[in-house]
Every structure is written in structure tokens, then in C-alpha cells.
Length: 104
Image (cartoon, rainbow, N blue to C red; front, side, top):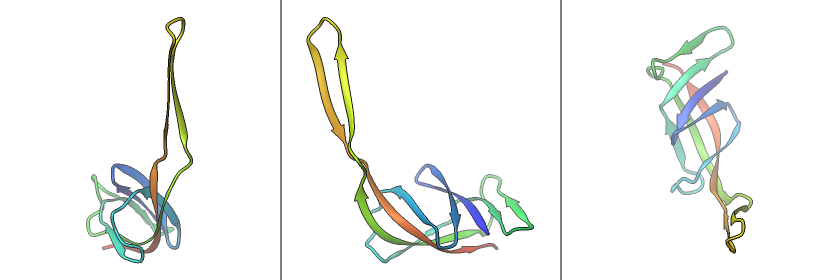
């Protein structure tokens, strides 16, 4: 059984006990998060597709930990103008573990 969910503007495939990396959440570690924006639910034989969301479907997840991703270097350069700028960015993420997928 799996579900496609939309969370914080991005889509994820959620399966039971799967670990999903989402943008940083301001939720304490160990708390549960309910996601009710379910786009599709499949239980092996039957597939339910929402318009745009499946009515009554819900995915429950537990917040595990937050972390920063590897640094991405951004380099700006213009030839013959002595213009060089280097900046770095580290995106923050949160791991959530899917506990349950509920179909109405």
C-alpha cells in the first residue's frame, strides 16, 4: 500500500515505515504530523485518484530529526570585468517516518 501526498508544495511517495526527507518543520522530535492532502492511494488492487485530493484519506507521520544538507556553492562570474562572487547555501531538512495510511 502506498500513497502520493502533497506536502509543503512538493509531492512524495509515502509507504508504511518509509523515511521521507521534507523541508524543515517547526515541530518537535517525536511528534506526529497528519497529512490530508493525499493525491492518490493504492492498496494493491484498487487505486483511488483524487480530484484534486482523495476524500477522507490521511497519512500519519512521526518527526524524527532535522539536519542540514551538504553545502552548495554558487559562483557568479563576469569575464573581463573583475567580478567574482562566491556564496554557499545549506538547505535544512526534516526526516519524517510514515506510520499509517488511512483510506476513508
